[in-house]
Image 1 (cartoon, protein in one colour):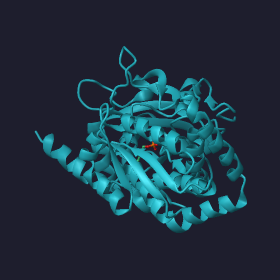
Image 2: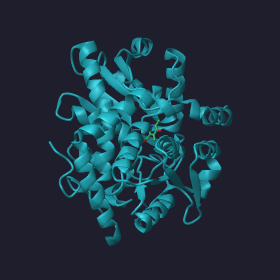
Image 3: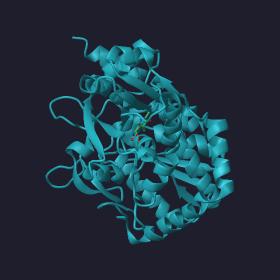
Length: 394
Ligand SMILES: *Cc1c(COP(=O)(O)O)cnc(C)c1O
């Protein structure tokens, strides 16, 4: 099974829905990527930084207490142990090396909650590149600490004041910048979204998660797991885990989306509640109103707050290779507390959605072996959780 095809399609999803002027930028990127993928020096350099700088391989930890409590066998893939606290660094390191091979010294990115911006600012600092991060004015206000982190790391954060002043407006600005400055500028996208070849490139760089996990579980259990579970924002930690198991038909994939809060359900669940549309240069499921306008997503987890989802997930859904479920804010807070209390591991709120889902899965799959991607650590979310608990006391 080989997706995407040469035109960047996963079934009927994906593609390159961009202005004419961007086509040559994307083609240049695709050509270079194909070359470096086979380049021994590139691969060795990436492996070096993943190991020595980011801290790979991450452990596959058997969560004994949680397993006993739930009546299933739970393994956690510990991406929370990586430098900067989440899986995003895997992709950021891969793409900064790609930029280096292309001779580009200036990195641009867009960020919503700031986590991708921090990963990009980190690798830009490491490789001596200049770094401009577009961020909606509204997001800047909400995420002051991450803005400060980026600045400390030497990046410039450029406020975007147009539209709803959030992520989708920041995307538009980043694309505008790239078209104008493509000669010396590399556009570093943070998830399996955007026009081809980005969904392919980001997936490839994140498959290190699934490749390691597959080896590790075979060693520990002597067999493959029954389920893989991961949270889905844009889709990169989940695809990174799932893809190396694609041909293992007996291994079931479960993607956990954010259902947000309140009366309007499924607030960030693009695959469950979205309609097919084009966002950020690719065709996939998108949260939109009856007039096709993009809706803002809402989730307590900053990294799941995105109105679209990667086209490869739309494809997995269309062929029923993966099942998608949604977990609400309140339940994710419960997942956050559960893992902290029984295993002494404070998970990121994004991953807490996946942790909570284990409770539901356990009810119907007693005794199953379940491998969960713990995409990040929860230190960044302590304030959000504290505020949530205070607000919902009574
Ligand atoms: C950004 C982020 C996510 C969501 O992004 P994906 O591309 O869907 O993986 C999930 N978990 C953490 C910790 C994140 O920082």
